[in-house]
Image 1 (cartoon, helix red, strand yellow):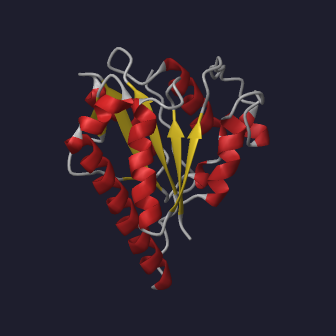
Image 2 (cartoon, helix red, strand yellow):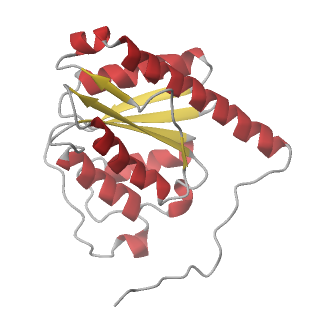
Image 3 (cartoon, one colour):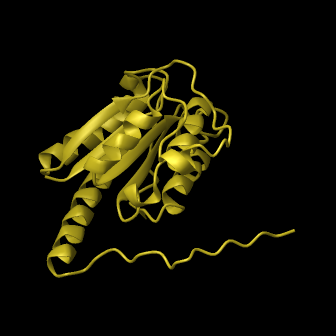
Length: 209
């Protein structure tokens, strides 16, 4: 069975972001795809310090937060959804620190060819900037970004408010169904002998001085 990991980057475990992710998870489960929602918690998150240790070990040198734990889960999932509330038109600093380290320290092949989607939650504005910021992590790792009938966002100051955002919740369900369809299409392609295209090697790097 295919599996999607949903990451709640809000400091509030059962807030608006969680409500959006739960709508996705329930639709995935109803469509035969396993869904796991993980809350990152609300403790301080270490930034990446560019020490380069992960290039030798394949894991982040800081091992007292969820980064390496989530990286290990990537071996067993077919895609991820990252959810964040909006702070000053962007994802939370804590979530950004987590994602910087996760995507930098984890071997690229754990992400390549898998599907990814971002979800933003706001009282009023800033969702599209947050949505775009989160999508950058998927796009640089050869992941397949999944869209919906509208940008993946919900609105409200409380989960009860989000319940009234009928369009937002419908967008979450449509996103989940698109993910189910894409996962099925990928599996059908594999049965026909199609594989995800590998990177050209060696990889080129150009510095602009």
